[in-house]
Amino acid sequence: MELVDTHGPEVIIAAVDALTDESKAEVTVSTAHKAKGREWPEVRIADDFPPPPDSDRQDDSGCPIPEPVSDINARLAYVAVTRARRQLDLGGLVWIESHTYVIGVDYGTLSGRAVVVRVADGAELAAAEHPYTHAVLDRALPDGTPLPPDWALQVPSDYIDVLRIAVPEALTRSGVHPDQVVGIGTDFTACTVLPVLADGTPLCELPELTGRPHAYVKLWRHHAAQAQADRITALAAARKEPWLQRYGGKISSEWEFAKALQLLEEDPELYELTERWIEAADWIVWRLSGAYVRNACTAGYKGQLQDGSYPSSDYLAALNPDFAGFVADKLDQPIGQLGARAGGLTAAAAWTGLPEGIAVCVGNVDAHVTAPAATAVGPGRMVAIMGTSTCHVMSSDQWAEVPGMCGVVEGGILPGLWGYETGQSGVGDIFGWFVRTAFPASYAEQAAALGRDPHEHLTALAARQRVGQHGLIALDW
Image (tube, rainbow, N blue to C red; front, side, top):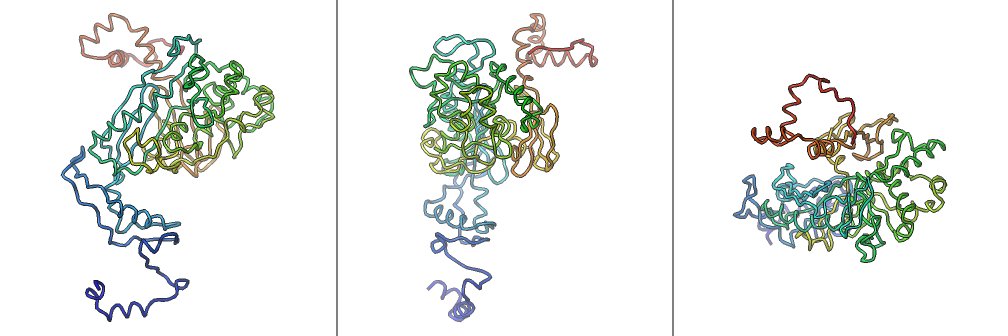
């Protein structure tokens, strides 16, 4: 009746007369209800999806925060936007972009940080940080079991605490209602890897294994697998393995295979108990979504996945006969492309305070994830990321083997491009070590008098020197 009253019967009859069989039609008009179960190459949303009214709350930038979308409208909108196979014109739903938010969680060496971002313009509304309770285990396990030199472990429950504490805190600070959050993405240090059971339970959480060092997370800067890394490189060079040159001719002790081989050779019982050897970047996504997907970044840069294949079982058997089945038995898993959806938020909704079912992004590495944020998305644009270590990343439409680089991986930074990585493992770590162990008392007094922290004071003193005047040739880390 509303249509008749608004347009009149003549207009409606003329419109009906213009209808044709859908197979011959240039445009198909459908309600969201009738569109269920159907798809079209291109879809435009009509202008009858009204935005929710603004509430009396404001975010940190002073913008009004809208009321949550009603369940019925949210379901209809979901049906509408998922009908497009190739191209979607949001049309009457374009307001969604200014009314929705995402959560990012950055897992660093000593803490995890959560940030709330507005989808419409990328504005950061609020952030929160949670230091890991156990920090880095480099001298002893929590029960006092001593660790040898070059070990660096972590406790996986510390990562869950970031979701429990930092995410709700950031959300509260932002003023955003949880129902307005549409997704969560994470990045992690790498290669940070752990042994787990088939259901994702870390071995260190089994009561009988809390005193076994190899049951814990091996942090990226765990360097006790250097002997294994040297053998991996030497054997690959002797066999002329084609993947070796894609890593600059050298495999790092920080990476997946060296650390796994160390586990096998130093604690074969735990190696047998390990059902999945998993990057922490993928483990946290598994905990969030219930889906275990290997992200393309760590699989390529840290797991030697090249052209769809890992190092062969013959090669692994030559390293150690008991290592032959490592890939098939403990490592191999479907690969998720960067930026893709790994699954929907499941039981972790109770930890984070976020709505169940929102998108959980495929995991990524803390350095590589910065390229899109820095808009370095075109071929040949490099980003230098500086922190505990430094990492230089660049994407290209051309493939090349570069001596000394950390790696080149197809889709390793951006889908469809070759990603190149190089860097320096110890940078911020070196500065931190120097300040802790070699900062003279007289300098400390001067810094305090000037209101500087140690790093600021050393920087000011160094700035007075000419290049090379200090005489330093090398600094051991």
